[in-house]
Every structure is written in C-alpha cells, then in structure tokens.
Image (tube, rainbow, N blue to C red; front, top):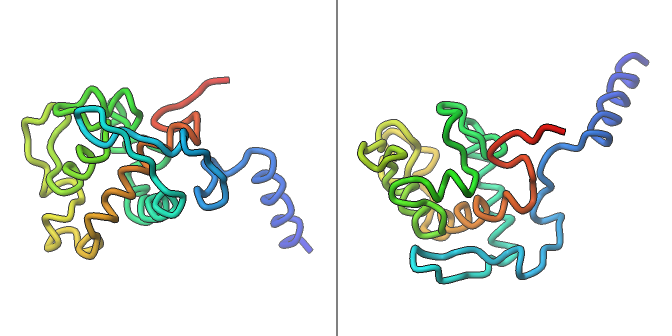
Amino acid sequence: MIKNLLWAAIASLVLFFGTGIAPASAVVLDEATRTVTLDGAGKKATISTEELASGQRLFNLQCTKCHLQGKTKTNNNVSLGLEDLAGAEPPRDNVLALVDYLEHPTSYDGVDNLEELHPNVSRPDIYPELKNFTKEDLQNISGYMLIAPRLDVRWGGTIYF
C-alpha cells in the first residue's frame, strides 16, 4: 500500500514538473527547428528526426554524466549553451566544429589538448565507451546539442521563474 502511494506521488511530481527535455523521437519538429549550422562558413543542414533521436540517445548515454541538460559539472562557467559554444576558440557552434571537438577536445581557449581529460574517440584506450562511435554518431550528437536549446529553455543554464 505504501509502495503504491509512493509510486503515485512520484508519478504526480513527474506529471506536474515534467522530466526536462522531451525525447526527440516523441516530438514532431518542423524543418526550421531541425536546421542547424553545419560549418564555420554558415552553411546550414537539416537534421532528420531519426538523426536527432539517435543524437539524443547517444548524448544521454555518454554525455549526461557531466553535461546533464547542457550544463558542465566540471566547469560551471562554460556550458553547452549556444552562446558559450560560440565563444570558444575555435567556435564550437556548428556541427563540424563539435565533431572536431569530440575527436580532439581542447580547452575553451583552444590552447590545451584535453584528449586525456575529456571523452573522445581518438583515445579508445582511455574512453572505451566511445570506441565504436562513428563519424555519423558524432554528427548526430552534435546536431542534437545544437537543437537542444530550442527544445529546453533550461539547456545550458538555469532559468529563474
């Protein structure tokens, strides 16, 4: 009886407050919402709903340990919000730049190599959980990261009501 009441209370809280960002596969997104910047020259690309769902799934599996809802646990001053991504050196506010980061991570100012500190596909000896990620997986994760702020107003920071 108490167990049933506990589950009912949890379900009520989830229904009232929500769980954060909705699964991309459960949301029908128009083409404009799924269009992101592809490269530093400003070329645009439209992410399919399947690519978006794949990116979200992979992000949730491997990235939320440190980047839950686009925040950065190890450095609260730098998030995965679009403004912070654009302020990095080099800017990381497009798909190809994020893919490059996931292959060869650097510090926010671009000076220090972080391949031994940040998960990446170049060091499967240190980060075996990423060793099977393909270029397409990295593109899907990157596309998701650029669309996520459109799906969740709290992405990358806290909104105070």
